Length: 237
Length: 86
Image (cartoon, rainbow over all chains, first blue to last red; front, side, top):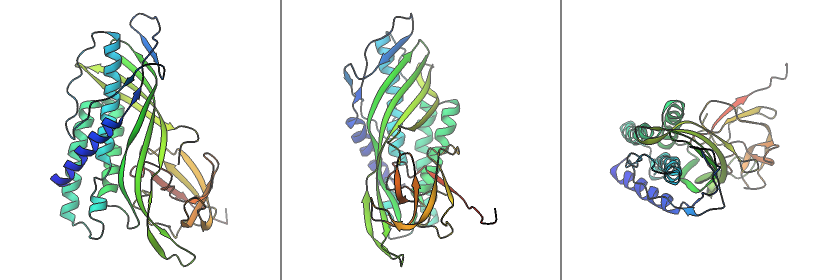
């Protein structure tokens, strides 16, 4: 990816992050040191825009339950939004359509995207979650720099994160959240029995995904140690 | 294969073949459906190999499910051919 491309990603990060509205926070239970938050009944919390490669600095140790809850939500949200923006092909796929990328261009783009994504993963993920994110990053970057001839991803992002429950202790947290993911693709349809390629068509799928993340407070920062998600029934492809 | 980078309509997939989907790049199969023929997707108007599935309900959807999935860069599709002799 070129410097110009990086700027595109930075802009995209800001837009996506600024557009997030985290429905949040309310009633905690009364277990000492343990805080479970039921969501949708409290105040909305917005996140600060993220810059590409400028993942948030170390999360300060929580000084209260509310601070810890906010820090956990931020630690869940920020890397997800940032990685999503990196994994969108800001976009060699679109920019290069019409002329093939050279081997050198592909190599440069791949290295740049992988370096930026790996840095974010290093800062915000650990253990199984880091391994999974690295695998996703590799797959995504490969698809971005070498798209098929009849399909190209031209944008993607997260439009909403709805926390359904948060359980936060002094050093560990479990996050349940419903994340709305969108994409914008250009597809070239076949038009009939002769399999003639038709015009490019834009599609904008959106899906809801149910995430369960386990997080730990490590060196003052909340990091994701395990993560999993599945489509919310009825909201998959 | 990645749905995004694959041929638009793979010629080696025939009616009755099973398509297995891994949504998140983990390698774990998370969805399966069946290639049912070459038709027009009624939702998108796309023509080619289509599949049917139960949940969520899709009738004659494009095999890649690209028009419906927001994670095209990380979704992998595997094909399993059912040999008539089996």
